[in-house]
Image (cartoon, rainbow, N blue to C red; front, side):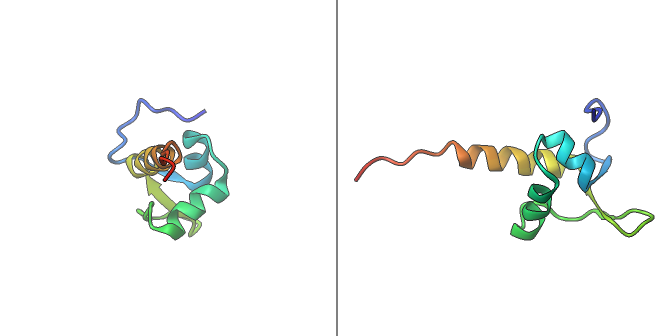
Length: 74
């Protein structure tokens, strides 16, 4: 389980940690990056991308809000 009581402005998460925190699959995190909803904050010691925790939370919120949209019948 990811600890959300940390400083979200500076904490960096791997793809796996970000997926766990947002309760989505790792592929969703990669898709958010590809679609421009999420930007890399750097690389870890193994060369894997890391993301700021606050950016992951924002991308998750944006995606869930878009999913709730409804359109009136024309």
